[in-house]
Length: 378
Image 1 (cartoon, rainbow, N blue to C red):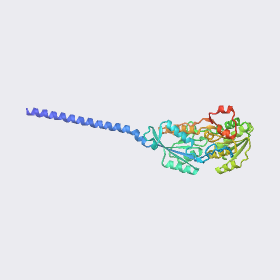
Image 2: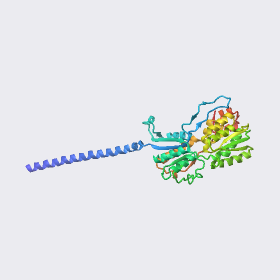
Image 3: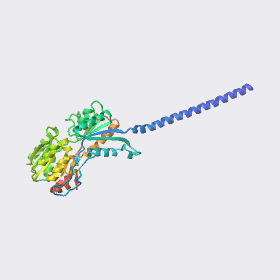
Image 4: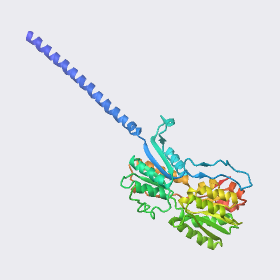
């Protein structure tokens, strides 16, 4: 009897120990599962703690033109000189990223849902842009947005071998500049949008003549020996000859030369100024527009913001839209796409007319011209 009771006791004890071990095992397993699930849930949050770092390279900052409607006339806007704080490309880039649910990593955006990014905008002279590009390569940033041909060239040189993606904007001929193998397949670290500024040169002359039937002389301002400007000038010269417009070819190599040339010019009725695709001219467009308004000589721009700043009109790709398009490349590359596999897309030209500038210049625009405009500034 004692042996039987002892056996029963041992059996019960073993059952209790087995039950206890099973309970411990289940608790341990549950804790492990919870830990794994918690870690998995935390992984995206941890990944977002480090924002996508985007370095932006651009010449500048550009002075914003001061509006004076002729020397004796009233000022149409503030005469206080100031520089642009963000190029239109960057404003477009930020807008495009916001629409794609990206959130800039700033204190005021704390708690806002979306993938974080940090934008490091660096503007300066050629030498400064090169220093900034080196700093981006050393850091390194996750990608670089380079504004205009010269900035792309510097970024390409200073990041060679690093594998840092470079998104270009404001480049007329990326294949001709040696940035990519082809528009359809870049096959390298550089991709982005192309402006096709040269291709619109003839159209600008035709539109200018429609706007100003009395146009007799056209001043083309450019930097000598710069290939896109040379090609643009050839198209302008051909159309000007057909329309019986005298072409004056101005070559300048610095801001001071441009300022001097505009001040000493023998302006006449029927004159007009044509801006060519050239980073030097675009960087100093304020001088051209201020001279245009002061001397009542209409100026025709090649990007939409030039009309916003005071040119009587502009025909070409939107700088804002180009920046917004680059946001799509940022999104794709951040998700694993290779720049060399992303085709380069052109930005379609738009025609913008500034009626305020036309009134200042005493230009009465034909209704047919206004009907062609994609946007009219009143």
